[in-house]
Length: 262
Image (tube, rainbow, N blue to C red; front, side):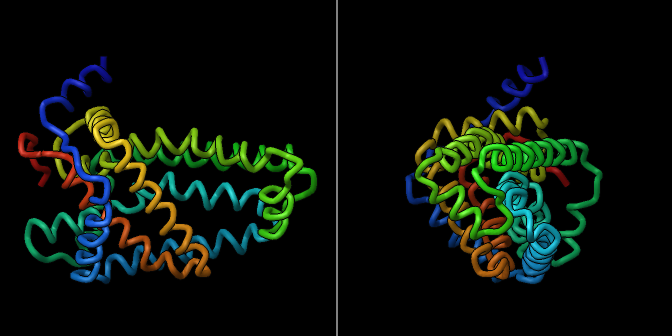
């Protein structure tokens, strides 16, 4: 019944169809938000880059675990960007924002965001465990570092392990992306239930399957580029994508008939 109520709630307003290349406009608008108020974004980016470096150092000889952890980052990234959605929201509403706006968004006053964040964390943990089990169980040799992963998993033409790893990752990532692409900005911005926000996110994907597949590809490519630059690229990529995701939400969802959150 809860899901049924969420679907009814979601259908009280409309979602929009957008052109294939509109994600490039979201990136441009997100960059402008980042430049208007860079400090919150840089703090978020530095914290996530530092966490990634700590993770890499602590598990540097266990790349079978790191490969899942870093790819699982994409699953939980939407909730990690909550403070930056709040910054973009403040810029849109008031023309100004600061670091306090970002930190205020992290106060656990809203059980909806906390609950959704826990679900994403559960999905990310599930993928890390699945990835680790797959690689340790089926790799022909131990995978201790990136070179081992490349040689034993990626370039091993005698085993379908890499293809299986990718397929399982996509099987988990696709519904998580569809459920969260606009859900967290919507929960932050408007009075709507978690199930209503998730149904809205799915409606956006069903209305714009190719465009949002393109958007998912851009997110993945930019995130991988940020990681490839010794994780330092995440200092810029994380806030840029967060602000751009807010622009995607505002473009895809017509929220005029939903009450604003204070």
